[in-house]
Length: 442
Ligand SMILES: C[S@@+](CC[C@H](N)C(=O)[O-])C[C@H]1O[C@@H](n2cnc3c(N)ncnc32)[C@H](O)[C@@H]1O
Image (cartoon, rainbow, N blue to C red; front, top):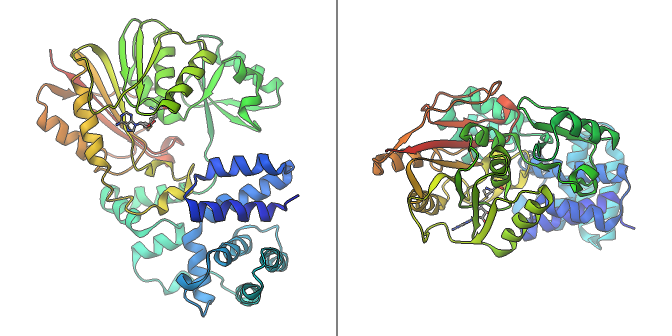
């Protein structure tokens, strides 16, 4: 059986070399290796911690290494990061233990030459009074980047777009695990009954700031929870729930959800519509469409029709009361959930805006006169959000922004047009998210 450190190493190495997503790689590795609860949480803490703090860890390693970071072989670097993470952030692990374990791990991986190098650097870091000395960094963007382990281009984007106060609050909130939110399926149960049922299964379930959205702790694998199997809830972040509650689809509406997989917004729409009306849930990928179909069955939702469709063109027009356009995006609002996203190349100046705009324009043709078009992303980047919607409104004079009436308790963070809202993690404890609602003129 593998040790938790070895499991953590394997996952981190895979993510480093194959660009796998952390949550998928972690769940798979924990299941395959059959680690007990304690070892699982130790391995997960190292994996997520190293991913979150990679820039800070590399800064420390660089400060103590005579070999340039780029020259350090990947397996060796992963071992160093894991050990430095334990020294810097895991109070309960004595430095000696983390150094010895790192050297042993290197030997087990047959990295005999590297084990001396690893031992040398780690012992110097362990002896140093200040392990991470930020005082030498004079540039503000670089300082924030190393301190919070977020790349400089993202920091610069946020400083320029949202200002220093909002950026610092946001950076303070990107570490640590986000809450796990679940949407109550009010077609089958109610919030109080679900909470009671979950508590009977030893799950810590509590109300959130939004009605019919609860937080869960101590779940283990969600698929094993009886209430989940009975279709009484599904996992969905607070942010999507805020957007859908604001959009407020009604019974008997005709709704199109043009980038719909895995289906979260369609399900919440169907529940708000009391399972009456019609929702056409489209996506580009067959395997993703299958997921929508199976979850609809579990939730006993019958008004969702699925279809494979490229949202840059449709066969129909002027038919929908509501169109949901939840486009593919850079995901900068998800840094707490998927820490590795921040290290992708060109994440800030990505070329996604072209497809996002194309999808928004073609989806607009589906909206009937008087109907609503919601554009949303899970990113915090004005190029993909506010500026893109600005452009759409200036080129589509038949649409106007609809004043948003946010649900009770939900607060804005920054001043924006009344038809759009950027949700920041630090304000409502949701993922970062953006949505705008536009109405087609009669
Ligand atoms: C942000 S996700 C949607 C999440 C979903 N709305 C939900 O709430 O569960 C974006 C989706 O767009 C899909 N997609 C990407 N390009 C597309 C295209 N050209 N046409 C339709 N769907 C597309 C992706 O497969 C992905 O499922």
